[in-house]
Length: 66
Image 1 (spheres, one colour):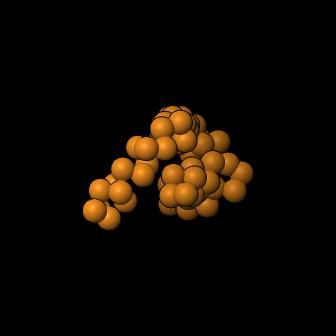
Image 2 (tube, rainbow, N blue to C red):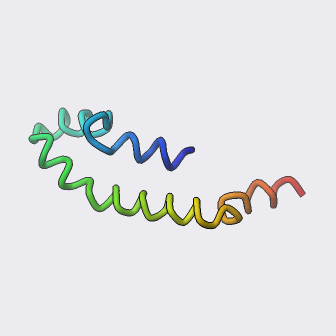
Image 3 (cartoon, rainbow, N blue to C red):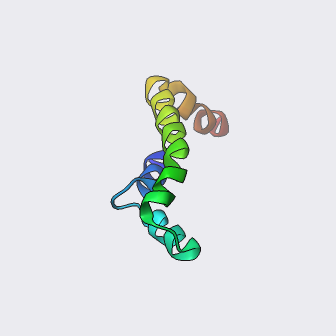
């Protein structure tokens, strides 16, 4: 859920963090979005790894509950 929320905060058109950064650096939204594209790709890859290997995402809670 945390990875999905982070991805949602930087993906246009609703990405709230994009509008915040746009206001700080006073650039066009297109320029800010171009800078975020590598991070979107990394988040999608991490999300795929977590979905495919659910043991990876459940390892820490299982370890801490022992």
